[in-house]
Amino acid sequence: MRFRTKDLVTAAVLIAIGIILPMIIHISGINGAVFLPMHIPVLLSGLILGSSLGLIVGIISPMLNHILTGMPPVPIIWIMLVELAVYGLVSGYLYRRVKMTLMPSLIFSMILGRISAALTVLVLGAVLSLPMPPLGLYIKGITITALPGIIIQILLIPSIVRAYEKNR
Image (tube, rainbow, N blue to C red):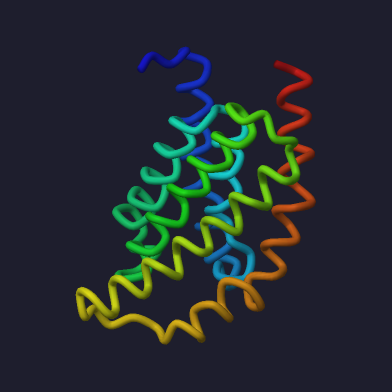
């Protein structure tokens, strides 16, 4: 698979944002689970760059974050790797390949990413016997606790994608 240089640079910038934005949130004392700072650049990458680069950004962002800052901690890193990879892959696939409109592509990818995260909690906990948060508590965290972040994503991401496409 060949990528244009401009797309690779954009992916690199989104990965950098995916590292810097969570650091800013954590330094300011805000709970990252509330505002979901790593989700925004990954969702943007899928919508702007397509499913392949969205998947790559969704995998590299949490890995580099963990290596450089220790966040997200183990075992949350494993859950986020799956969740963010699904965000990047699905948002790009629905918007760029299926040609679904922007908002449904964003919302479906957010839903599928959260479902995949919940399934990852089940697999890691039940099958591999890793210490995981209780599934009900985790689902509450990715829905109720994360509601401010979800709202920010729904309000912010479409505007950024439209501005990017307009200036492309």
